[in-house]
Image (tube, rainbow, N blue to C red):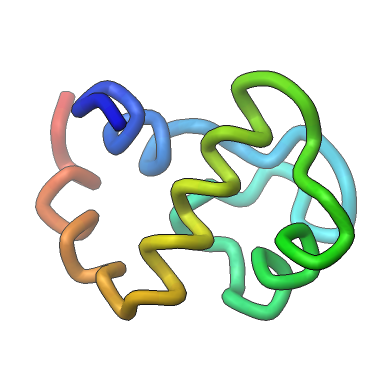
Length: 71
């Protein structure tokens, strides 16, 4: 994991689906768990969703709060 990946979680928007345009860091845990069960997309989006799933699963979302206001 790179620091840049954490910054992307608070700036990258979901490009499709029910939560289209929602920030990755704001996706609900049950949606992230669905991807974990069914399979993450390929590429950068999949890697970000995996990372966010791990953060959510380990109850670490609070770590992203200070990053939300990073330019």
